[in-house]
Image (cartoon, rainbow, N blue to C red):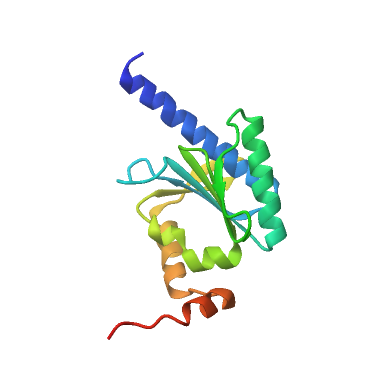
Length: 165
């Protein structure tokens, strides 16, 4: 098998697994699910990111645990993970696909959509990933910029920082 053929096979596998992960978190009632295709983003730590939001710490825990089980069921084994104790942002790293399970407050604060805006964004629609068109993506990014909500728990943490003069 040629190197190019192997890369295409690996890319197809990564995309399929990202979609599988998005469906798995959707099954646990996660919200605002986005898939980032980082294939063409220089320096990206993975091929795909899957982001989702939860409304409570209990839901963050349930969605994360459900994703871990789904990964194991799919033959991926247990991912490298962190964030379980705080239950604000749990990262499940399957190497080529990284799943970010956010509490809504943490997602509002960190806004990975802005950080990785070079990526192609996909949403789930009727069990398939649909690429966001440029207008929709721009509207999402502008909304994040114009309507940034800093949750109280993060505002309190950052209030001690002052700008150097």
